[in-house]
Image (cartoon, rainbow, N blue to C red; front, side, top):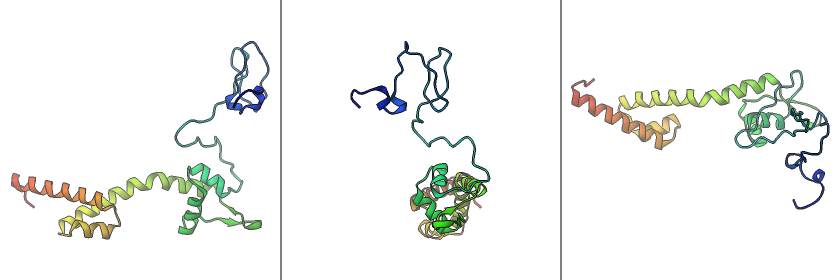
Length: 169
């Protein structure tokens, strides 16, 4: 942005002259010890920070849910379609969610991949012991074939080393 008054620039890009002393309105940020107004900077990189407090007792919209989960609104729609989110439909067809529902989905979102990975690996090794081909294991478990193949190779290597050591099952 070229030229213009500082007030024409976005708030996070305004530079305050050190000689210019002014009181900062509460919406602009806090004051530093020098008496100059400081403007809070936008979050840079990664997932945007969550609001410090959830609006308990208030219904949440799709947009708010998406922002809190760090996903797009279309993902929230998919969660509704799969039955993971249960909205209350308000006037005008607007869908509203409860805070408890947001927290439940958030917990599942961050804990599910680890739990699923462990379960799939254990199930894969069990099928390998039964003599099932790695391709069929990937199909049965609905898991990434590349990862199943890597697990199968680990299983074969371990099986050979046990046979060489005389620890055959």
